[in-house]
Image (cartoon, rainbow, N blue to C red):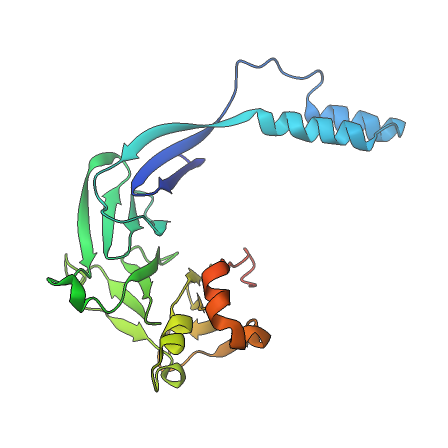
Length: 249
């Protein structure tokens, strides 16, 4: 995959796009940076000119679809994660996680399958999956029950046995409809050094140390004042979290 390539999903399909400059457009006079420097020197730079230049720069890039990775998911895709080896990636839906080679669009390997023989026995679904940022053999995936499972792909071709399970014992006591609802993990991210993992459910953001799976090292309360409206909140709100390049949330 090229440095400026990206894999994205549309419902149950995958496609790889590469961002390419529109070389057929004539270059601007003097180039963008030189023109900017001259205007600052002359103190004639207006907000309208800045907006025009930025808009023109954005229009100089477009995305082209290079491959379509199809017919591998029965449900809408919730996660795509590139591997640090630069050759493979995973795609995840509610019940399955598939491993792909970036150069082979017609074949994938099912490495995790949570679909029971009888769908009435289904107790949880996969909500998010991600590769470790450094170790290409490790991946993590979270579920609607509030569990995050760490998997080592070297152990077996079918990763149905988790190497470790991160679950906060404090939040897995007595069960009710709403406790199970707010325990569902909506997002998960490794920090850039791979030593910690951030896990987001509906009411908390939890920071876990990869070397300690008994409890999170920090819990940040989110929207605590809305706990009594949890039913409405979970239906109408989109919950996400992210990390920055300097490991800050």
